[in-house]
Length: 207
Image (cartoon, rainbow, N blue to C red):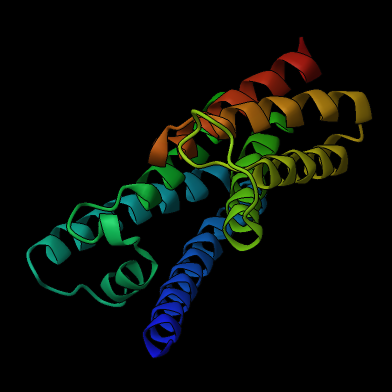
C-alpha cells in the first residue's frame, strides 16, 4: 500500500515538473506574438533583433553543450527543455525565430501577422491544452490530441477574425493551421505552421 502511494506521488511529481517545463516553454513561445507589433514600428529593426536573437541563443547552446553557462539564457533553456532534449542542441527557439522572419519576409500584411499569430497562439495554446487537459490522441501525429487540435483551430480562427474580419476565410485558414499543427514535424513546426498558414492566408486574402 505504501509502495503504491509512493509510486503515485512520484508519478504526480514527474507530471507536475513536465507541466511546469511546458508552461515555461510556451510562455517563451507566446512572446513571438509581439513581432507583428514591432514590425509595424520598424520592420528592418525587427528582422535584425530576430536574427541577433537566433545567433545569441545558438552561441548559448554551444556553450551549454560545453558545460558552460552564458548569461541567463542557459538557465532558462535548462528550465524549459524536455528531458529528451537536455543532451542535444535545443532547436526550438531557432526555428521559432526563423518562422517569424520568413513570415515577415515573404508575406504582406495581414498575411504575415496571421502567420505569426498562428505560430504563437495556435501552436502555443494547442500544446498547453494537450498537456493540461489530455484526452484521446490522434493516430500518426506523434502524440497530438483532439483537444489540442480543436484549441489550435479556435485560437487561429479568433486571431484571423480579429485581424481580417473575414469569418468564412478565418474558418479555412484555421482549418489549414490545424492540419499543419497535426504534422509530426517536431521543432520544424515552428517553420511549417507560419509558412503554410501565411501562404493560405495570402492566397485567400489577396489572390
